[in-house]
Image (tube, rainbow, N blue to C red; front, side, top):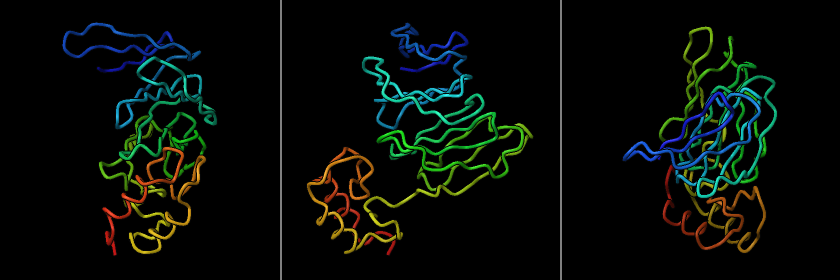
Length: 203
């Protein structure tokens, strides 16, 4: 399917094979400027003239989170390739980076954003993001939250310290745990396997 934002504040879902309208999601109080699917296709993010970003479950259109903080319309939204982050660009001349697990605002970025941020996108590996501004410039910047798969402590090397971190936190649950590498809310076998499969990467 594809998704489109509308001036009536709705998001419409279309079947690619025949162009049929298969669903309408409503909730914004302004034009919807931008929509983006998560990497696994389960969530849609929408950025609106009303200054908010909304996260919707694709299967039933359920509203999962409303992200607030921008003081102008949200012109563009993009998920990181690993699905952990959402980045947004706004006419308020800021970029905001959000944690998908709980909708927490992680950072506000305003370098070289003159004229507002009209378009934004992560690089395929998530290490960089690029954005276009109203002053006709295109900027590349480093993602401050990029990390290798399995790199719990963010030092660029997947090693014994990452393995120990997961083992010591094994069984813990909650949002935002650094050892919860897949963001499912619990430190378990899946996180341990991610470290083991990537062991030695970047070292």
